[in-house]
Image (cartoon, rainbow, N blue to C red; front, side):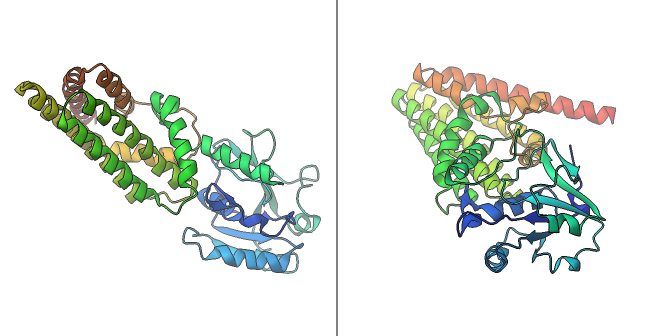
Length: 378
């Protein structure tokens, strides 16, 4: 259910924490309170006030410590029952429990506050908005709110986020293998200050190293190249996972990721063809490698706008829930790396480059025909 959160003034209530620094404890690389605030910002909240009477002085210092974060774009202030009148002219309010982990769930809804469901919030807060429209945020996908009351809760919350940091348009092998491995790598990278774009460049470097192995030719280099390409693909997933978990997604980063992927793929296809040519002396492999690059580049050019749009849409949700996929979405993925690895084990890179040269160009022809068909209909 899509909600327009920008129409409401949001209030996040912070219960007294069990220990000092509780709301600054990190979950997947982001302090607890800041993560909730950034989640609300992602949901469309434009004006947010933080309420707590129990530790007002410490709370204001807490808020000041995170207000300098460059990711924050919304209007953020501290408030209590004494100063609530300064915003009481707002027509409606959304109240959030700051002791729970707020999630960007697609099936969330706003529920009108009543005497029966206002118990988690202080009476003073509920009374202040008694004559206004007051709602609280409820996620139907959770059996109960994800309260963070001890260290174990933080650990479980981070594990939950890591498991759900894929995209809703992931391919079959992404869901089956790639995301499982990349999540383990993401858990390690979250403990560092490495940025998503730096991880993208790392993936690019490993992918080009794979291409170099294929270019050298031979059975052992073929296996080495296919293994490095697998590692490159796993690392390639990490940059997006880090960006989504740390609220660092950007259009430039998405473009960099897509361009890097295609540089790696085209380099690998060309290197496999040339490596087979050097090993066998058969010129046909050189031309097959060039055809594979041509078909891949043509498909990329035709699909680039669609891929960027799909990636931006998929990034809006951290869920792994499936979505409808077009044929182009199903074909334009990285699942081929597992076929390449299997064929490399059997020493049949010649079969791979033949299939890739034919398949990429047939795919490009299909995309061109679809483009003309859509133009004719329009």
